[in-house]
Length: 86
Image 1 (cartoon, rainbow, N blue to C red):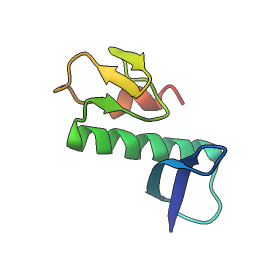
Image 2 (cartoon, one colour):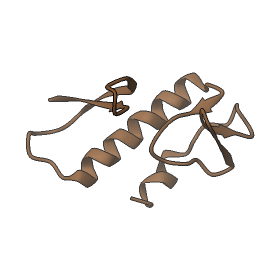
Image 3 (cartoon, one colour):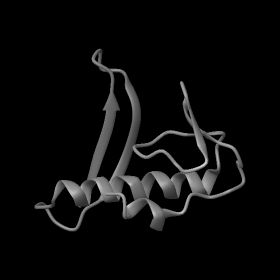
Image 4 (cartoon, rainbow, N blue to C red):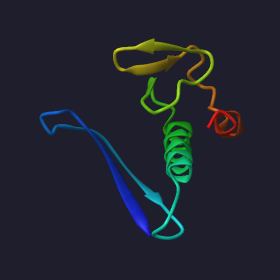
């Protein structure tokens, strides 16, 4: 089953939209957050954009208006370090 998550403003403007796969209709909030973080990190690692926009703040990143900017742009985010925080 695929779940679509949209981050939107109060006026309805969509800022971010991702689709995550869930195993069944009954799932926990922790599983949803973990799946979202994993999806965001995988998307970032695949594209390595200038800014990371997601729920977590990567280590070695500075917070900006556009998201989080990593000091070393060619460095991928380690997903295993992110899950123990949840």
